[in-house]
Image (cartoon, rainbow, N blue to C red; front, side, top):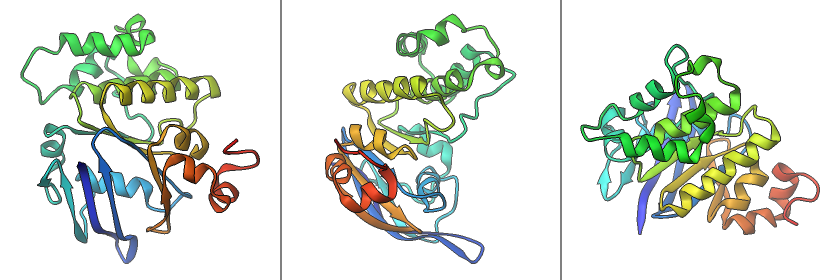
Length: 238
């Protein structure tokens, strides 16, 4: 069953067409990876789905309802949340305050959800009262993920979660993504680290200058000679 269906999505910035009729589906419970070069339209795709940039044409359907044209807060309230590129935590608020802001649309008790985030990221519990701006880059990424989880998303979109992080932290972030997948959260992952993304993806596709390119299972793309040459480097897919 498709949780997200994007049909013929077009987005323009001024006279530049960033997305040129992109269509894809994300099945419930899947981890779907989007790879491609800088400027290919990966982040624009997530921002369009989230309602953060206007679409020129096309239709976005989420959980059976058309959401294209809705306001971002309405989309979030329906269980579609994004971890933005660059973390974008609130630097002058504590870790706990950032988590509480993640649940700003909820009216119920969020205590159990905060504890769940702390179980996923014990380091955040240790730094619960520390200002987010004083955290390391890896800790801020953990906080950005935790903040999104506070809305109990059905679909979690992640924009470059490994960007600028040390290899050990990247390994930890991808382990958490796998854990979230096991918990039943559907994940749409935009990632420059194509090798790591494809290894955990049920399905994946390549965006090339605003158009959909090669697609298939994560393993299919790991073993595709053209994808290997363009995005994975020597020895990938073994």
